Image (cartoon, rainbow, N blue to C red):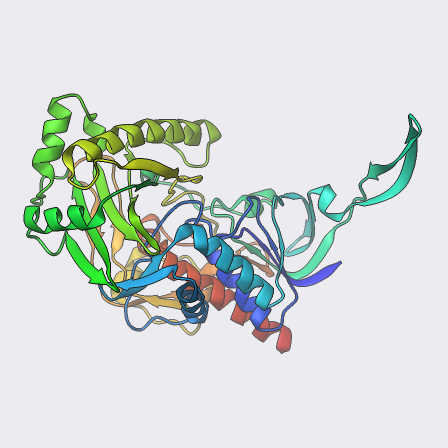
Length: 438
């Protein structure tokens, strides 16, 4: 069994890579350890996709995704941004898109073993049941039953793509990793509340917060869409601050519950709101199971307090309830693999040009910190990321896409967003097609 490309991880970047490989005629296998595609957008409830400038490249996958979501009422363009998606319906659309271009998808699939040597990866072994056969029968109590006898089968490919987020595949084959020289950014756990009177909440918000750089409300095709935010940082005036201060004083919220608060409406869900919070401020390592377990537990405890806070203090939330809690933590930075080019914050700020850019963006350097008034949100000019930063230093036929790319801590803080991850996946697909066609 042989493929042109095997992609490990069906999240944001992995879906873009797989779809474009299939569309370009490459025989493609996409392995996902969960039960649906989409990663941050679906499992992580990370909506909307943030805008990243007017000169982006490698955007075909993103535009097709928008178009397909539009067809089923799962997308809206709000404040000029077309990236407002419905996480649940995105699962269905991504399944369809992979079928459209003949990408083979395997859910509940994990790489068990890898064959590699020197500078090439040759084949992988996945969960045996995926590739096994019933080739013997046994007679038990007069019932003839098939006996499960798995065969050890390795799947070959010309190219491999690690889109696992934490670089799990690269770790299996002993790739060199970049050192982490500072604290990890805080993780988040998103959630959704439903049963909200959005019109009532929107009218109240417009009166309560006059700052349109923070709070916006817009009617689109008869539906109210809105966004607002608050953080515990004191270097900016936040209209919602008195409400959070009061809740902390009364013991309804912990002080840390209010460190970061942001809400958005959701396409196709007219009585629901998505929360970009809570942000877990304890210094936890997203590569360690004990730490991610702690983050999930703390996050869910905070979600209950935040939901009760909203019901008490926000008009329109009187009958609201928690309708979904993300299956995945929002992890901003974790493992990063050494690539053929190490991209630095100096490259980004200088707008350095490259012969083979994988993406062009102007998304700011966005690095969260657990302490007050210490997070970074620095706007820069337009910048490029070279394809070489997505190439493994150790293996000539392995690419790493998503948050685990070969970039320093501050530069990665600008490059980790979904729109850039889409471009990374598409760029790798086009590069592989070009190499196989040469």
